[in-house]
Length: 245
Image (cartoon, rainbow, N blue to C red; front, side, top):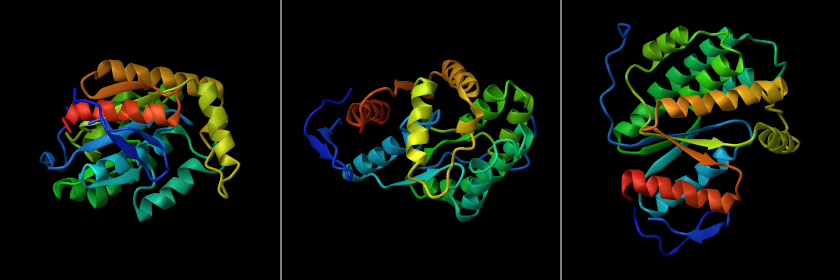
């Protein structure tokens, strides 16, 4: 692992140590020049904050990067996000949600992610396809089959996968408390999934951990019950070790 030395100060003023099968209807996507890193986790796990801090760190290392999210990483995606994360928790069933998420994902990939990667830009995404499996399969007690989800992935994404996925693991009770507190300051309350209750989020957490266990090469699991600064250091250690920066 790279040596740890120096100081890094983020835009948020946090100071710390700098630490160095089916037939596809689309052809396989060539391996791009940039890196695709996804952050996953339950509600209130702090991944969005950590994504911004990582982006700042990479810019300091002269690594061009962009931050994005699912749903909502494109202009059309923002409209889909409003439908998916606001309003009555029962307005869609799990199948409808999956189809909307994958519509957002295809637009996100073709309009933003793949072009950036092919230009050598690192793309940091707040959620990707693992979220769909965790929420719509595990969270909903397997009301959408894995076979259906894998088919949607194959049609929409092909053989493309993240270079690294960091899972921020946190007790759902703590995460929900954080998320509802954050929502108090929002003009538009994005709490549709929070409203599904603790049992849903316990299943979600178990699902994420199962996904991580199935793909240990791609996933790194971090304990998210830490301060912002300490968790940032953990993220930088993972990035420095994986990509030798």
